Length: 165
Image (cartoon, rainbow, N blue to C red; front, side, top):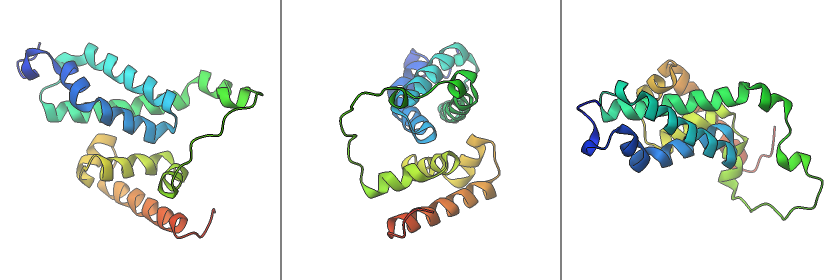
């Protein structure tokens, strides 16, 4: 085990304690589904336990978790299973209880593209800098700024009551 492990318990223990919520929220921002976010978070933690020896520091751990979460969420969308199945809600023809009410901000955030939701989440909820987001996502800082700018414009439009596109 790497000598930089936290408290002698390993990077996975640290990730579960400090970063599981971040991984889940990021996965939810990317997938838009509670169940998919739970699956992604679980898979990322399992992958971390297998790759723990490659982690060099806590900063490296956080970057690894963000990148692994985004990659896993992306692969979920590309999977053949996902493309050939209907969500359970769409398949069920029985009456369902009303979905929980969302506030206007939650609805506006949900309407953003997954790429925009991810950068908004990392910037505002995880308080990451633009250069950190760019490094974590493997894109240029200018691309992060553009996604943030477009997301802000879309949120402003939706929250000012100008309706849908």
